[in-house]
Length: 208
Image 1 (tube, helix red, strand yellow):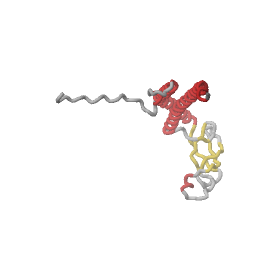
Image 2 (tube, rainbow, N blue to C red):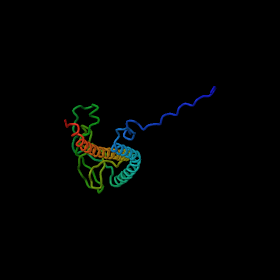
Image 3 (tube, rainbow, N blue to C red):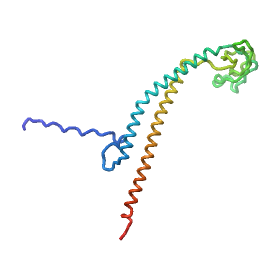
Image 4 (cartoon, helix red, strand yellow):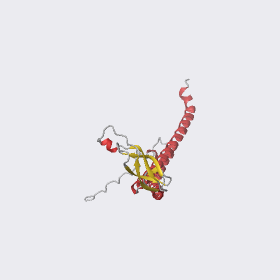
């Protein structure tokens, strides 16, 4: 009709991604095992997407609380004290170099513990520090030299590390589950193919 404008044809139906979910698309060569493997892959993908933020939150929160309690215990059982070198610290082979400024050598020191007893131990000292010099060190209730209590940054860093390990565990478990399912399905496919070929081969190899 004059003046009549025809509507454009509707767009073709959208297909699932050809690479990721090709087993779920209809085609004459698709086997039932392909469908099963495709749904297993899709299900594991959804599980990973749901479990990743959950693992981040739950494990990260639990680790943060654990390390916070550890820091509180360390703060209650450790104290700073002054230690005196009872020997000269080792000299660095390149005095004044950038490496010498970062290097520390274990050196014998003497200090007083929380009970007022004099103890000796080894503490890290700067190169060539002379005997009689003093160091600020941390000691615990057992009179042993130790490190300072965990700082807030260290608590956050360790909690984040634990959360990331948990996420990697989720992804690894999903990959192992999919790989196992793939091997089982492939084994059954090969067994079915051999069985079918055993019935077909005689018709192909028998001559009149």
